[in-house]
Amino acid sequence: MDKPIYFDNNATTPLDPEVLEVMLPYYNEKFGNASSVHHVYGREAKEAVEKSRKIIASELNAKPKEIVFTSGATEAINLAIRGVCDQWMEKGRHIVTQMTEHKAALDTCKSMEKRGWEVTYLTVASDGRVDPQQVLDAIREDTVLVSIMHANNEIGILQPIAEIGTICRTWNVYFLVDAAQSFAKLPLNVEALGIDLLSATAHKIYGPAGIGILHVRQRNPKVELTPQMTGGGHEHGFRSGTSAVPLIVGFGRAVELCAEKREEENRRLSILRDKLVDGIVAEHPDVILNGSKEHRLPHNASLCFPGLDAESLIIKMKGIACSTGSACTSISLEPSHVIRALGYDTELAHSTIRFSLGRFNTEAEVSTALEMINKTVSGMKESLPSRRLTS
Ligand SMILES: *Cc1c(COP(=O)(O)O)cnc(C)c1O
Image (cartoon, rainbow, N blue to C red):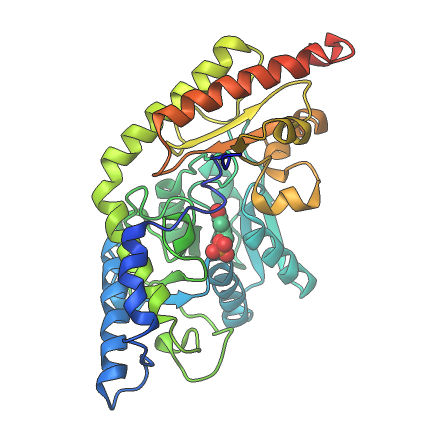
């Protein structure tokens, strides 16, 4: 059997062959340690790392020295939250975040609560967005950090980052943005948006897994945080450990390619996404597109199939690789915390499927998938004991 159509690009994206190509030499002939300054092997590696750092910084309108390489977005978020808390515990022990954050942020906040910090978890409206006024209301004398993601990984909804950035700047609170789903796919300017800390990861943008960044603002204001990994003082002292040169090289190339292709790719993917959603809704008008229609990633469709169990639906659609919530919550079998936050009950939350398209999806795949989805949904509806559930 052919492999299923890959509609799970929010979980991870395939490596772009152009990215792999620039990485390969750094696995063999250019194998040097980027910290070995005394010979050409080390200098060649160092140069490659700094080139990527520059590309990534420029994508964010940041300075190269503000980019800290980590193993991924999870580590970057941990460094940001734990690092700020450890550094500023004399100033205050209060964090503001919101309920649809990725588990990397939520679980780290929970872990800070166990250590005595207070966390305010803001609710979102039924469109999935945080009201900036709520952020303002939640900020207190002892607030050290506001952590609000840019694009949600399950529903693809974009948060009002610019407005929240202005509030944080006015009230002198650090602003962390988890941009794992949007970095390089959407333009992000940390200056214009008032962002102090930003996390991103390569494996969501057609780069390799195992490499990410934390952007750490160095002026107006200079963000001070306590390193969570100590050792050789790599990455301006923020994150020790030998640089993963091939991964960093791949990350840089992935960002370049995303930036080059951005407009065209987003246009193409939003057309494909709409074709998929409209095609499903035309046949099954009870299907709900979750969250704001306007403020969303162009390639993301999170759909509710009222009355149907998403797990069973996914298992029946063998030809499509997609997921219920995020890849992480799927393992736990709990209904997604993101869908619940939209105000849905448990049953509706259990009927949600995320289709996330990407660079390598074709129009033909969308047509094939559409047929498969509609057929499977019709079949499942017919076998329901009664239509009671769909009312
Ligand atoms: C994927 C993802 C993460 C985690 O990134 P890793 O690099 O896999 O650790 C964090 N936040 C969001 C929004 C994500 O989509």
